[in-house]
Image (tube, rainbow, N blue to C red; front, side):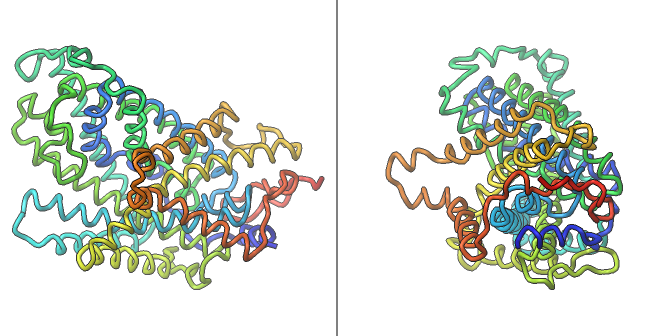
Length: 501
């Protein structure tokens, strides 16, 4: 029954959202989604924890996993380009209960993240205007993000394009300045690669330290999956989605790996200045420190402006992603029907208002009850990794069903290479990162901290088991999985349906 409901939903002329995102928008959204405070600030703490070698290994491995995840998502998104794709794929290729749990999990994650980002925007503004109350800047940021998302999907895409471009240009300048500093053209004297063999470098703290950096790297890369959400509103998903995904891996290597290499070469891992991990630590951002080391006095103000751009971009993307996921949940019958309504410009306003209200209430809880806010943020902490797990599992099932039903890979507009290695690696690493969040709390018996760290896992299990018990859903047999492609307007291609076994 659930499967037929999902099929009927998909076969409608999908989503009355508008396909207004150009290829350049989708490419920049995919790229900008993984460039933020995780790179600009927290990368320093990764080097401090595991040394330059450990940080490079962790970020390279996590970057590889993200690439495989994106290729998995790309294969499904070009076959079925709809908004809120993760929930629909989980429901369609695995189990409707998993689609229900994944959808609400992802919506909750981004709604809370919007609140965190607007709080962070206030911290960043204090760098310039410490006397202005922080809640004013947070309110300004929330209104700005809401307005961008309320105008049109083109407005969102164009805003993200330019904000992502600012981040990309900053990284290119940083890499150039850093390399010139390493060889001694800037900054007075050459640092060379001596910091890679300084004291315990390049590897510090062994495997446990590298595992802890996996967690930091994982959070840094979250947001790349936004390309799957944008597929439902892309003008040409069969072209723009594969192009964006193919660019992700090389840009991750270029931006993250080279940036960490430069930071580790210029600054020793023992530097206390590398310990900053939030946007409030802009003065000791490794980017700021490298610019200062090269003799650029205005580095802190420039980097603060870039970090502010990153934070607003993250809030903007979060508002978009959570709104589209809530809209998709409604279309699939997993949320109240009124949330699927859209305006003439294709914006799902009820879903946008609901997400904004939750984000605002979460933000105000940080003022009224810090303990509640802490629990809300903790509850969203692992949801990104859980979403990645769902993407990998859905693709594994999709490809197996596709082949089992007699289809050939040549029928797919885009197919992920290295199957099944890619999704299996992503599944294993996602589990490792989730388990490796805070194993010390388990060993020491600090159960309150365990609950704070891992609360998102039981929440997803409750959603999954609760829906399964209520609707009596089952794992869909491979022969019954609907792998039918979808037209650009969202309707099923009747001539492409697989034959019944």
